[in-house]
Image 1 (tube, helix red, strand yellow):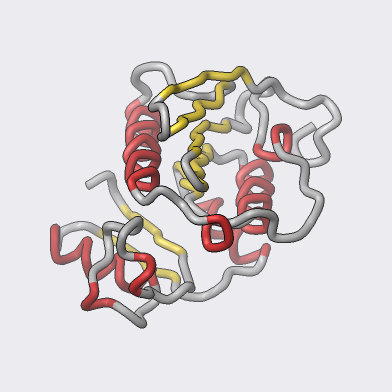
Image 2 (cartoon, rainbow, N blue to C red):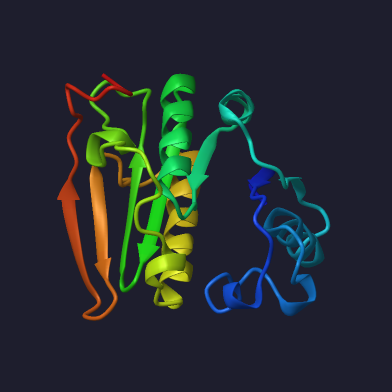
Length: 196
């Protein structure tokens, strides 16, 4: 493994999650997703170190967890969580690998607050409050979460190993209906309330 994994998710497993959240199985229906992930990963490799946080973190607890991490992966499905993770990573100057998928569209990027010219999540998406669109409301093409999750793992390993070129400063957008990829540059917003 890559060291100590900390998985934070207080949501509970439902049958409707299984087609897109391939880490889980029907044996874990009703369990928290963090606990289910821990059991499944430990079954694959009992030698890895995992901590499952199966409760909601307030801003202070989130910051403390982010501060301990080398790299943070945002795999959440709502804007309030994304903005909270982004704020904690900027404050703690921690690498953030952000991935998202909804309907047939997905995106991935890397934010590095240690670099003065690196954008953050709020440079791209303004925090106007509220939940916004979520996959539970709009649906999701199930294979996309696996594609984005694998890409997030690849970006994380490159960051930890300091190899290759990461997606820092770039936003990769995937259209699963056409399998077209677009790469956009994402400059830092000089008026961003979080990172500027």
